[in-house]
Image 1 (cartoon, rainbow, N blue to C red):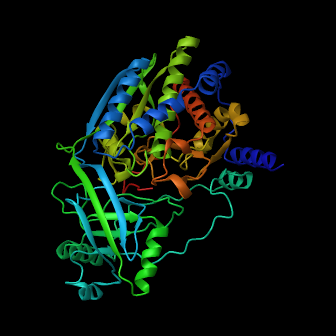
Image 2: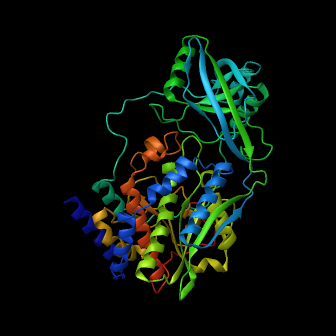
Image 3: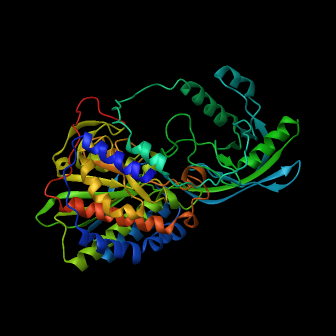
Amino acid sequence: MMKKVLYTLSLVLMTMLGLTAQETVNNNLNEIIRKHGMDESQVMEIAAWLTDIYGPRLTGSPMLDKATDWAVQTLKDWGMDNVHKEEWGPFGRGWELQHFEMHALAPNYYPIIAYPKAWSPSSEGVLKGGVVFLNANDEEELKKYRGQLKGKFVLLDTIRTVNEWFEAPAKRINDSWLLDMANAPEPAPRVFRNFRRSSAGFRTALWDLMKSEGVLAVIDRSYKGDLGTVFVSRATTGVGRAQDVGRQVVSQVTMAIEHYNRIFRMLNRGMEVELSMELKTKYTNPDGMEHNIIAEIPGTDLKDEIVMFGAHFDSWHSGTGATDNAAGSSVMMEAARILLETIKESGIQPRRTLRIALWTGEEQGLLGSRAYVRQHFADTDNRGNLQSLKAGQEKISGYFNLDNGTGKIRGVYLQGNHKVAPIFRAWLEPFKDLDAGTLTLSNTGGTDHLAFDAIGIPGFQFIQDPIAYGARTHHSNMDNWDHLVEEDLKQAATIVASFVMHTAMRDEKLPRKPIDLGEGSDQ
């Protein structure tokens, strides 16, 4: 009953908006796409190469370079056209983890579950020292620690309560959730923000103290994660970026919560805790430049117009970057393969040129996609806010992105573009049996479609089942191939391929939202 109500209310919403025109759907093409996407899929094999063999893929790292070369060669082998790496930057120095171990030595021994933060420097051998909890909330309170931290491991976080799981962390989007999304109002535009953070002075003073004192390492625990799952990203410097060449970085480690809490409780009892650590790392990427991966399927009568689809290719370093975002990259590569096979079988060439893009530097702030947009489509500031348009901007019909884990596609975030609703409604209709059918006017953030949306190109992220993305795999040491859901990725690649092909075959480009050439947007 709920599904019927959801579908009915969604249709009512479209009617109220005056969006009832019928969009053409090529069912014959969809049948071929389904065959190659659902019955003859290669998506898990692609994902295995990106994770087991070429993971993790930290921006600037040698492993990312190897993964990039593999993807370029694979796309060429499939028969893609104009396959190349497109340079952007400078990004800064890369980083490679070569060895890490940490142990508790006193008051008793046990191995520690922990991971170094990216861009932490080598320890130059095994380091041993006591543990101190730095309990300061302002610059004045920091002063009491001067002269007390040399040769110490420093804890920055308080204890965190761990609650047992009485429900499975993996979830599907239910009908009620989808109904709320379908009935969401048009989002309010966000204007450019450039606020000062009140804690900046304290943060700078804190990290200056860590450097001047000569601490062995700073240890934290993430705000979530348990049962050995550790969420890790990059080292903090107080000022600037850890990847900046010449930037001094204090070694930093994120520890499993159970081990962190144990040490903290011992310190609270007045007990002395001693740890050892050995960390071997290497700074890489001497020219500071990075590369996106680009490939095409040429169009015919409308070949100068482009349909783009993509995902970010880089990852963090503690897992192999499976759900974030080998899942999205594998789906987009698989969609390209499906399209090639569909064209071969059907004899139908796309009218518009199809362009896949696999972005790097997403984890550090959409750097690769924003650089690409800046080079080809618009002048923007360093946060992606529009300044002026270039001629190439009008040639892009739309951009489709996938970057919310391994979950199946349930629909599309319209980013406030109500004009595309009847088009996407028609394109989703053939996939209702695969649980895809919801459109929401809502925005969603945090990934590369924003680089396109910000400059007036229709850019879309698909709604996906969360599975255990936020609870278990996103930026964690458990982000590995084993947590990819094969049927979901097959479904996603099939739907993406259909959307891309149907966008290519329309008489008109996808409709656009009004564009503001004023302050811009960071939504």
